[in-house]
Structures are given as C-alpha cells and as structure tokens.
Image 1 (cartoon, rainbow over the protein chains, first blue to last red):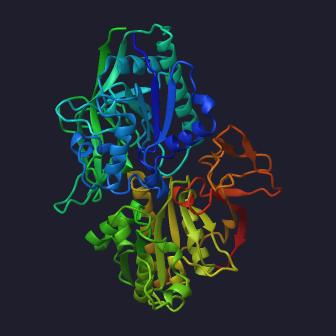
Image 2: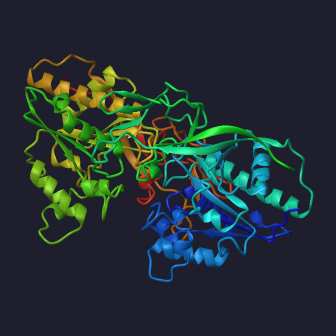
Image 3: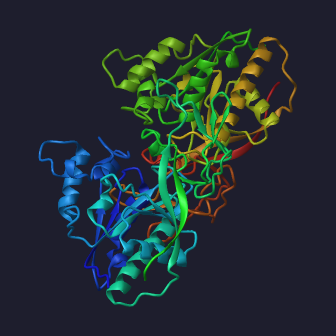
Length: 295
Length: 295
C-alpha cells in the first residue's frame, strides 16, 4: 500500500502563472486548509524572483532545469539553475527525494480546463489521476513522457506526483472560477493521499483515458525563423478534440490555410500556449488511449 | 474639410501585444494593403526591443512616456524614454506633428471586443469612431481622457488618431479571428481617411454612445500592498455591461464578496487586464453617454 509522510505543493514554478502562486499564498495564510493528520504538507513558491518581476522566468525556464547536468554542477549558474539546485536540495535529491509526492501548479493560455500532466508512469500517479477524472469527468489526463529523454521538469525530483495545468487563462492574471476549481482539485488530492495513508481508498473503475504525448508541432515560419501564421480559427480552443487528416491547422498571414496532412487521428493540447511560442511549439499532438491499470 | 497627407499605423507599443505587431509585419510585407493614392501610410513597430524579449516593455511602459518632461529631457534615460524621444522626432514633435493621424494598435486580456480608445476629443476622432461603430455595432468607444493631466500616450503626439484595443487575448499570443477583425477595422479606417481626402464621406447618424472614463478601481489589498482577491466571477468578462450598486466586484481569497457600493450606475472596462495589475488597476469605471456631434 502506498503511504505518504511529506507532500509538497509547488506554485509559481513559472512566475507569471498566478493561480498556483496565490493558492500557495492562501495555503500559507490558512494552513489548516492543507493540514492532514497523516502527513506533513509543504507549500513552496518555486520561483519568487520570477514572480516579483511577473515573468515566466528570469534567466531560464526553471521547469527545464531539473536535469542532473545542472543539478550536479557546482559552478556558478543562472538564477533558475541555482534555484533548481536549491529546490533539489530541499525536496530531493532527484530520484531519492525527501518528499513522497510533488504537486506542481501551472496555468496555460490553452483551453485545457483542469488537466493532470503525468510526468512519470508510476502506477500510483495513474491511479490518482484516474480517481480524479472519475469524480470530475472534465479532468483530463495528459501524459507528457518522452522515454528516451531525461525529464527536466521539477516533478522529476520525485516519482510520485504530477503537474496540474489549468486554462485558458492569460498569464499574469487570476480567474476566480478557475482558482476555485484548482483549489478544489488540490484539496481532493490531499484527501486521497490521506485516505491512502489510512488504507481507506474508494474503488473506481480501473480503466482510464490518457492522452499520450506524440510530438510537438511548430508554427509555420519563414527562413528567418519568423512566424508566418496563426492557429487556425477552427482549431483555436479545441484542446483534447480530435484532429483528422485534412482538418485545418494554421491560417497564414496571407490567408492560406495549412491542413493537418498526416494519416493518424490525433488530439492536440497546449494549442496556442503563450509560453511555447519561444519554444517553437504551436501545440502538442497526443493519441487518446484507454488504459487498464491494477488497483 | 479634414485632410490627411501622412498616416501612421503603430504596432507593438507594448512588445507582447502580438496582434498589432504581426499586422505591422504583414503590412510591411504586403504594402499594397495599406497604400492609398491620397496619403502616405507609415507602419511602425514602436518598441522592437520589448517585442524581441516578448514583454510589455524593457524598462518602463512606452505608452506612458510621451510627456514633455521626458520628451524634452536631453539627458540619458531608459530604453523606452529614448524610444519615445525617437518616435516623437519621427512622427512629432508632440502637438506639432509631421503626421496627420496616428492609429495605435493594442490588445487586452479584458473582454473588450473591438474598442476605439479616444485619447483626444478632436471632433474628427469622434466622427470617425461614430462611423466605425455605425457600420460595425460591436465596436465600442471608450474615451480615456483625463482633462487635468498631460496625456502620456503615444497618441498624444497628434490630435487626430486613437488607439484600438482588441480582446480578450492573452499577451504573447495571436488569435486568428481577432487578427482578421482588427485588420478589417484598420482597412476601414484607411478607406475613411481616403474618402475624407476625396471629400466623399458617407452620412451617418450624428449621435454616438461613448463610454467616458470616470476612474480606476484597484484590487483589494492587504497592508503590504499584496492582492487579497480577484475580480468576482459574476463580473469577469462583463466589460461595457452595467454595474449597479450592490453588484459583486471582487471575491477575496478567503471567499468574501466585495460589492460595488457607490450610488452611480457605471460601466467597467479593462476588467482583469494583465498589464494593469502592476498599475493598481483592476478595472476602469466609465459612464455611458450619448453624444451629439456636428457632421
């Protein structure tokens, strides 16, 4: 049976994603909200300097810094690299952590509703995600696992845990409705961890729908690397909906439609996420899979 | 009769408002779109360095730099102050400009649709705004004029001209639908200026609805100046709708509702604009007025 002694809730891994940041501040002001008798809850503002300047990051995306090459480098480094080392010392070290579960709170400008972002295939993560989507069917599960690559996400410190993405919401803003939904989801997760410790978890159906990461798609660009088009109006906001061969993907500035021309049926997510323009990601394509898992 | 020899279209006065920026790039690639035989059209990327780093500004909000104290100061100054001086030399000087009309393109995270932002009461601006809202009734007119204060907006270089705000759209993103609507509005404006030069403008009704700036409202804050609440879910997205005494304004993080308690009926705009958090503005309150103007 799974058990948990120390649980970390992280907000502001990206400094302009206010929902997680102000939830952390709320939990720090009202700690009873996240206090459980069976485990200790840590609440951490991951990137306070990026929050202070209201940007995703100061020097470098913190949530791409949790690779061993950075964490084990004792030389001087950027603000976020130092912050990653500090968080790795506080919660980690990576793969041998002091905490038993990490919940990392994010927001997105994409229409992803309440999404669980699986970053490790630990069976517990799948069970918990399945439980959350069983009690709240609008909760979607996106597995962004690239098996051949070392994960650089904060969540990679600890096998158990995942990210939450909530949207659509512009960076640097709060939306009361999404704030409340996110808070409710967090409290449900803490309840579940507490029930695990009590060996008292509810039975649920052991199949679950997971959107598995396939690849990213960049914007149409000219030879200088400049964007030449936008997400097509018919695709905008349709995260987790099916994209069939022949469906419109982009509309170029000179009014040409670019179609999805591959053969496979896919389900795009992170459509038109603001922070991904610089990463060359217009959307992530996923496959929709029904997974059976052991209870 | 009004006439125009030189018209400036400005985009990227804020570096993360992509709609105007990519429209400027489009017009530079396809200049015939904005070419009229009766006047010269300039297209200007106002703040290229802020665009390069994808932020509203580098050092200081460029659209608050067009005051004489900055423009006439020959000493060293910030990036945006220098840029304001350069633009003032290129288009101005302020109040004695080389251009006859300035259109400044902005976007907002608020649900303001297509809005004309009047920054000078020149009768031509009102006539043109009235014309635009007569042919496209979803176009709203917001007059943000504070008579006792020197205007610091880029538009203050030239009496004729105004800003366009388009939303809701997260900063740092493009939305094809709003992009097309904005482009169409710009082209309609250029057609109208051309018709003025030909002395061939269509007659319209000479009354128009204008939302007059009254004051700004800040978020609820604690004694350290930290935000303690969010725009109330019942108010979110309701720009240009009436706010009556007793209507909810904010929801605090500890779930209290703060109501609008003044006596006057008002119409909020710029509700939950991301860039205004740092300015202490949760929304701007306006009064709705029906204005008669001479044709």
